[in-house]
Image (cartoon, rainbow, N blue to C red; front, side, top):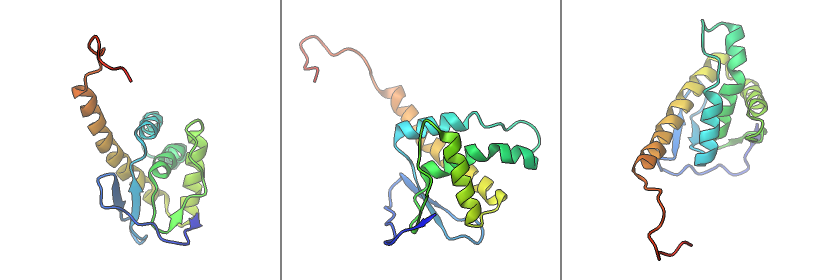
Length: 147
């Protein structure tokens, strides 16, 4: 991870939230741009969650966990080295998980972050689904401007 020379200011808006995991400092997250969030949640939905949570199964889930955590990461003092690439979310996720491990997050702490980040992202995505339900996407009336 890269230490920021100037700490990031975290706005008090619904888009932002913080998570405290054990002895780590409070970590801020930001709901990504809607299209990004949709693609990350779609990617995470393919996470293999069947069966008992063995070490091998959790290791197989790390790319998904890292991608979700990394897409929303907005730490005050630390930036990720990994760069978000929606075309290579598994690689991004592996790199984020590796950075978390380097910062001494245990695998259980990564799982905890993942569960909380995904819940927060899904909650915020639900708002967009509700908006889709009430939005009217029909043709403009005859003679109405179309710009």
